[in-house]
Length: 266
Image 1 (cartoon, rainbow, N blue to C red):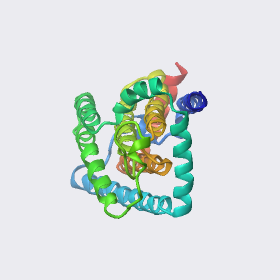
Image 2 (cartoon, rainbow, N blue to C red):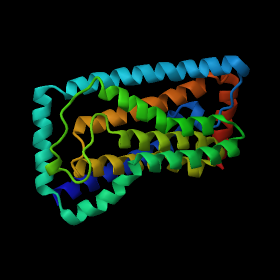
Image 3 (cartoon, rainbow, N blue to C red):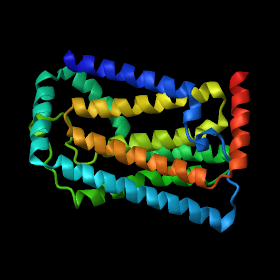
């Protein structure tokens, strides 16, 4: 029951954080609030892709360093102790439920969810960017994980103590859920009112927490694998947000900010 209590407390913390972010949307980047690009044509594409490429490089550099740290013997010893403790306290009936819930991080589930969301948001925005980014995000994550497996060789948990398949560094399911949900929120936020927009951080964080917690509970990953997935997902979403902001003029941002405040006051 202690594991379930940890999960319940963690979920309450995530919901509180999501509510706080939802109430204080001024803390979020302007791109999340309906900004339209003011730089046209090839220059826009060059700036946008340049920022995305830099974001990928920085994110993967951090993920690489974290993976190397997680492979040290002292860290692995602590990981093994946590893993064994969780395995000893696991409840079979709960594991069966979590085995289904953790499927939200399945590669094909996330891919088709991303394609569907991209199609809807692209049509809603009347722009190709939401569609292209959401269609590409799962394949990009897949190949980034494939690359990092060639340079990070941390031993995996013992399959005998795991429910379901054993994962490696970094947790692809964690990264994918954060990427798909995060990018969907980025492109949905400008299209909805303030009340709906206030719910978006909480929804994204809750989905990510469910994936992280269930994979940890089932023993499929070391803790560092899950943290690595969070780093990759958050880093790439942040890169998209920064790219959106870089192709946006300050005048447009100020006008959108003013309109958003008017909408919230109403």
